[in-house]
Amino acid sequence: MAFRKSKIVECAVTAPSFFWLTLLFVIPTIIVFAIAFKPADPYGGVGGGWTLHTILTLSNPNYPAIIWRTIWISIITTLFCVVLGIPTGYCLARVSARWRHILLVLIVVPFWTSFLVRVFAWKVLLHPDGFLKRMLVALDVLRPDSLLLYNDNAVLLVMVYTYLPFAILPIYAATEKFDFHLIEAARDLGATRFQTLFKVFLPGIQRGLITAFLVVFIPALGSYVIPDIVGGLSSEMIGNKIAQRTFVDRHLPHASALSALLTLAVLVPLIAIFGMQKRKSKEPPTLIETA
Amino acid sequence: MRHSRIPLFTTLAIIFVFYLPIMVLVVNSFNDSRFGGNWGGFTLKWYARLLEEQQIWEAVWNTLLIAVGATLVSMVLGTAAGFALHRFQSRLQRLHFALIYTPLVIPDILMGMSLLLLFVALNVELGLMTIFLAHVTFCISYVAMVILARFQDFDFSVIEAAQDLGANWWGATWRVLLPLLAPGIAAGGLLAFTLSLDDFVISFFVAGPGSTTLPIRIYSMIKHGYPPLINALSTILLLVTFAAVTLSQHLSRSYQKK
Image (cartoon, rainbow over all chains, first blue to last red; front, side, top):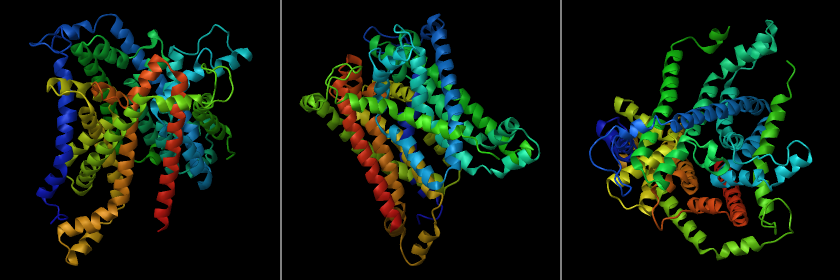
C-alpha cells in the first residue's frame, strides 16, 4: 500500500533523487577536494600521485588579495541588499493588496529575463560612450575622463542589482507576518523611532533578514560573470580565477584547490547560521525577547 | 504612528533602476548607430541581421532540447523527492533534505567545476549529454522544493478515502494523488524549464565542442563584441519572457476560477 508509511515505499521514492544527487553532486565535490592534492600533467589533465604543491601555491601573495576582495565585495553587496530590502519589504507589506500585487510583479519580472542580458544591459548603460555617462558629465556630476565601467564600483552596482530581489522577497515575507501592533505598543510605552526600529521591528523580522543574508552572500561569493563582464583586471574574484585556471591555463588541480577553498568559505556562514537558529529556537519567542 | 514616506520612495526608486538598463537595451536595438551613446535613427536592420545568424539558431535549438529533457527528468525525480520528504520523517529523510537543499545555495561555479572534474575523471565526452546531466542535477532541488511547499496544504485523507472506496495504490496514485498534485508539478516544471534556459555558468563548464547553448553564445557575443545584435536578441528574449509570464498568469488565474 503506497500510503501506509512502509519502508519499501520510502526507499522507492527516495532512491532516484538520492542516487542522482550522490553521483552528480556529492561525489564531484569530493573529487574537487581530492584533485586539489594532485599534480597537473602537461596535457591539461590530472597527473598521478599526490602532492601538496598546488595547495602551497595558494599562499602566493596574489591569492590572499583576491580572496579578501571576494569577501569584502560580497559583504558590501549583502549590506546594500539588506538595507534596501528592509524599506521595500516594509512598503510591500503595508500597501493595499491590489498595489502589493502590482509592485511584486514589477519587482520580479525583470529577473525573469536572461541573467547575461541584464549584465550586458548594465555594460551598455555604463559604457564610456553610453547614455548615463554623457548625462552625468553634462550635469557636471562626473568628470569626462572618469570611468563608470571596469572597476569595483561597477561590480558592486551590478551585484546589488542582481541579488536585490532575492533579499526583498524573504524580508517582505517576514514583514508581512510581523505584528504591527507591537510598533504602536512600543511607541506608546515611550520608545523613540530609532529604538522601535532596532529593538522591535528588526528583531521581529530577523528570520527574513537571515534568509536574505544567506541567499545574497553565498551566491555573491561565487560570482564570476559579473566581475568578468563589468569589472576590470583589478576587480577579479575567486570565481574568475577558477574559470581562468580551467579555461585559459587548463590547470585543473589549481582550479580545484581554489574551488575547495570557495566551498569551505560557503560552508562556514551556512553552518554558523544553522547552528545559531537551532540555539535560538529553544529560547522564548521574539515578543518576550525584545520586551 | 505617522507613516514615513521613505519606504515608498525607496521602492519606487528601486523599481525604476530595475527597468532602466532594460529600457536602454530595447531602445538601442532600434538604433541605427552602432554605438549606444547617440541616436542614429530608427532601424530594424539588427533584427534582419539576427535572422541570418545561423549559429544563434543552432544554439536556440540546443538550449530548447536540453531544457525540455532536463525539465521532464527533473519533474519525475523532484516530485518523488518532494513526496518522500513530506510523507516520511526519518533519519534518511533528514539526509535526503540536506542533499536536496545544498545545491540551492551552493554557487553555480562550484557545481560547474565539480561536474567538469567528474566528467574528466570518468572520461565522459563533453557535449549536450553532459549539459543535460548537469541541468537535471540543479533542477531536481527546485522542483522538489515547489512540490514540498504544495504538500503543506495537501489533504491526505482524500487518498485514504479513495482507498477505502476500493482503489488500489496504483489507482490512488494515478487517479487521485497525481491529478491533485498536477498544478504543483507544472509549477515546478516551469521553474526548472526557465532555470535551464537561462543557465550559463554550469553549462559553460561542462559544454564541449558543438554543444553551444544560447547563453553560451550570448556570452561569447558579449566578450567579442557585437553589441547591436545582442540588443536585438535581448529584446526578442524579453518579449518571449513577458508573453510567457502573461500567459502563465492568465492560465493560473483561470485555473483558480474553476
